[in-house]
Image (cartoon, rainbow, N blue to C red; front, side, top):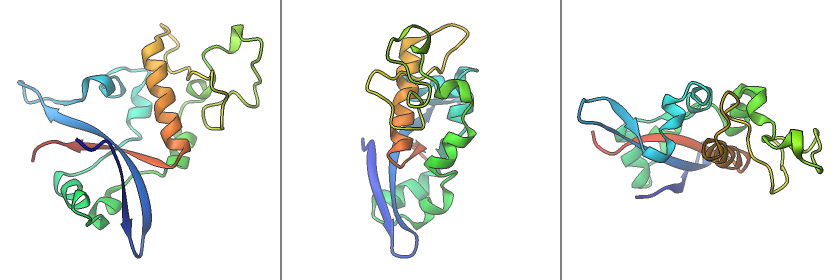
Length: 154
């Protein structure tokens, strides 16, 4: 399945998208792909997952066929705005307390952080995997990607 792609409209411009797929489970509950579902279910990450745009099946299918206007109209906050709505603690580096090279002005998720940066997404119980996924989301936002949730079926 397509994970990243661009859509363009003559009037609205170009948009770069990162897609997380959702489906209905056997109990008819909506679930996201396993790797990304923590942004829907984990209380510490939900504020980030809430910034992803849940798009309709028809808008997504149109965009895959180079008719992106409907999907563009469904997009939520811009990647830049997503950083403004992210809890400040998540933007800090998880290694800030024990890193000899930590710089509080540079080691932030919404800036161009050093390669060793890891988002501080899970504070109650540090979870390297969830911090890494959050760092990937921050990288996408910083590079102008809209993160969307797209259904696999109608």
